[in-house]
Image (tube, rainbow, N blue to C red):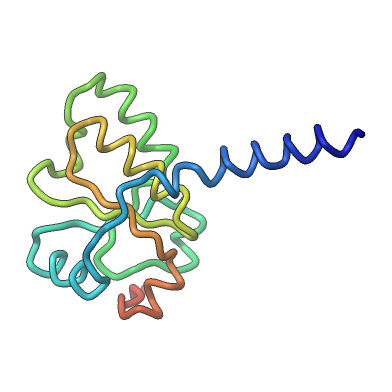
Length: 135
């Protein structure tokens, strides 16, 4: 009898964690198309992982903008543009597994940015042809 409430709670917890990943606007472009857009300066790649994760390795040309910092900046901007992010380019967000990228994408969409959450995480992006930064 006690397993039903526990099972329901577990399912709800998983949905709460995974929900943003499924709800976010996933890019229709292939990873090669995303790379071309970034190379042509039509898009920017934002890494929303935390600094310690970034320091262990990151994509060449990506900009670090941890989700925690993004949330603070959005609160401080009070509905205005975030000065460090371009409104005239597509913002591609990525993280380790996709969930934080999806959350960041939703936050930025609400601020009027053109944004796409990349479902592949950092390691998958590297395997997919994105170059690791050399530092």
